[in-house]
Length: 286
Ligand code: SF4
Image (cartoon, rainbow, N blue to C red; front, side):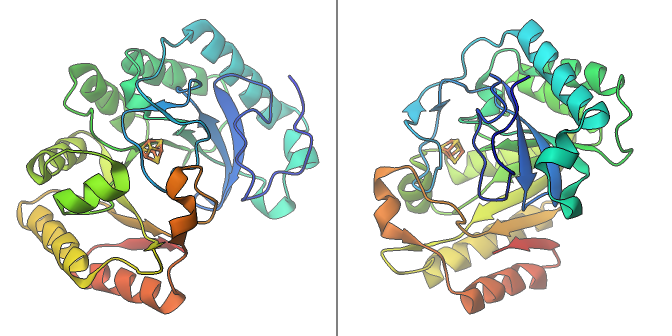
């Protein structure tokens, strides 16, 4: 396989760094080690368009058909390189020389692929052939909009048997907010139902991106709606693992990029504190 030209760091998530179509290495600030990324959207297509999205030339649409043989070849090749080759030594700083997870996180919504269930099965099969850490997780980073599809649910059931985790995007609990941030028209009722479904099938964390828009953080009404929504989920007995709250670390590739900036650290910590007060675990990533 082609070698990465530079030492990877947390700001370098280039999908083609290893010269592969589906598999890419990331030293992840979220995961705290090397994450084996799987990008099922090499066409840069997503059914949403988040204003902070870092995918260049993002298009609205779905993932193209997955070449499962190629994906298996790439995954085997890369896991071999990580476990038997000198990739770690050559490309990864000493403090991050551990394989943290395999993450379905690409240039679009991964569950939009028709082969989603087969992809999960494939990962499970390939994983068994390598001496990987017992705690290795399989993470699905998703906007959660397609979880009502039976083959996505089947994939989540399979993930649950593989130390799987779903990171389910929730940036706003108002229709206006989701339209503004995600360009999504999903109703709150649907979002609630999809989170509930996800959490019933596989361990589920919510992931919330916070930022200033035109210099202003989330309004107090937005914060109230967001916290009320979390309360509703808890009261309904939805077994959430917690909330991953993260700031914008890398530049958006969307036309709104200039309107976005990082929230103030104090604001960020207070926001996380409000979620913790509900009794939920928060993993902050400023
Ligand atoms: S859901 Fe993810 S890939 Fe899709 S537009 Fe939003 S940030 Fe980008």
